[in-house]
Image 1 (spheres, rainbow, N blue to C red):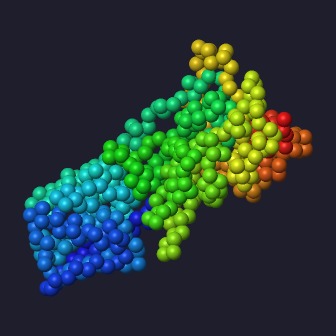
Image 2: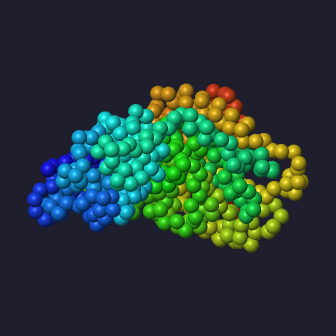
Image 3: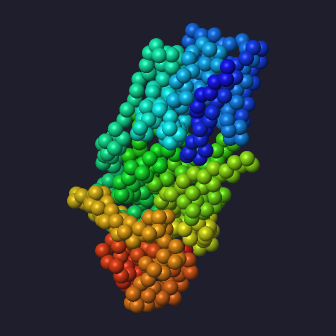
Length: 513
């Protein structure tokens, strides 16, 4: 008898429906075709043990299984459950009249227990789009899949439970989630708050500008000056997640298998801080079975690279294209996958090998050549993609001992959100542009032209400070954001002056003692 069950394969953060065709005829033979990987080919032993542990008999017949489409590679043990159900139905041991209504996924243990899978959320979305009535999957992933409306999500604990449901002898728990209610309830206050930061008003202002315009930012300062402390608080002033952004980021975490059992949707923007020993593949994604990297896990959030010059140059260079395209492409011989990578890059570094160049009290022991060599570890093309470069000096004692609390994150976030609303209105006709940092040269000509005094100020600064050509566009983008924060349409000389202040490494005098 020929029977069909339905599952799905992951491609990037999307899913494609896989039809599992099982033909059971007299004979003694077992063959599995349709580009299965090793984990799927090894499923026969798991399925035999799970079926027998559930009180049924694995058919001693000629079994041929095709996983269609045959040219789509299938990976992982999540096909165990639909394969087992298909085999039993093809042998006539269980009825098959309900199989076309459900997408089924789950890994089987030898005792028939159903284990968790990756990518439950995108698979559930695909099931709804394909018109399936329901989705049967492991109970550990059920709440994640139940985020999808208009789909019956059934939580399976064992193969026997699924068989009983399909046979009409019992029912599986139906899991329901009020997506919007759970999402907004989970949006709580951040663990980190800028009210805990003493002093550093100029740096906090730079972080506010970066958050308001979506600008990448580099902090340069001595050890212990507060670079990491302030970077961790940046998500607390970014606009809250929208439901669309949350769903998009949650799909990435689902595919990567990084969602906790009790999490349905991510409610706060991600903050990823990989160690400087990370490999290029771990950062951008890839591998023999491609997985999202750190830059995709930071999508719609912040990627923090501490001790920037200590990262491998290869690691830093592979970020250049994702920073520009907001997407990372992993190419293999047979297929190509794209992962979203729309993150804010925040980096921190010491100004020199000893860490005390430009320190107000401690002398620097490095020569100008050593300083330049240290800065040279970060390439010009990468620095070209960082709009704001701000110097940090240690906080003086009188600021540290102040009892008066600093301005909190909530007040800063309100200003940031107001500036973002201005940008949303400005770029309504440009769906691929969401903030000032993403403006193209054509959009800059239209929206980031300074007035006459501002243009004169910029020209004088370029000549006096010997700023590089790459600084010109960055200054105008940042000045546009500063004007938005001030609630002004025109870019004035004071906005240009502040933006110039945020281009420390572009000055030819930097590193010269």
